[in-house]
Figure 1 (cartoon, protein in one colour):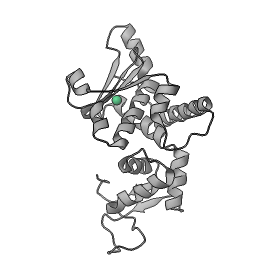
Figure 2 (tube, protein in one colour):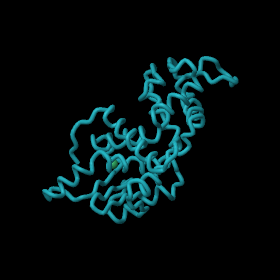
Figure 3 (cartoon, rainbow, N blue to C red):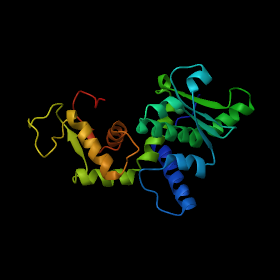
Figure 4 (tube, protein in one colour):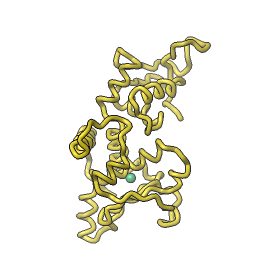
Length: 225
Ligand SMILES: [Zn+2]
């Protein structure tokens, strides 16, 4: 699907607005873990289903799909069976991203009979603009910037952590975690727990920390998983 360019700030504002509107409906403060299934069903009024999308769509790498006219979000049942909550929840939030950011484009295209009214999300298309935008929205929705910075400051009071080395320079196993690249998962886990981002993967937390400039990787290697 072709989508117009959107600035990150604009996507983040849409995610923040969704949380604020959801909060107004449920009448209480919304804090991580963000209950994205409740957002989908109770707030957005969409049908959330888990289906064998490989079989239904005849493709083997479908994560989820958003059916605009039917007001339905379908998640590939194998994500449920894998028991990988982080991936499952992120996919739900990603589909919410399509619903918020892109459904008007699908409606316009469907009226002109140019495309079908479904957005199908495949792993191999992750770098396409529409998919990237939905991923970024999901990240903003599940890990709001304020809560993320608060959690990070509990782990690192200076407000940012620079990774200069891939390997630990300290050696051994001390009580302190050396802020090197190979320890990314310890750092991410502390922030994940501290912020209550319990339905998000460590990988997503690490990526969000980098995105917000909290974790700065100055090595030539990528944070890997
Ligand atoms: Zn998608």
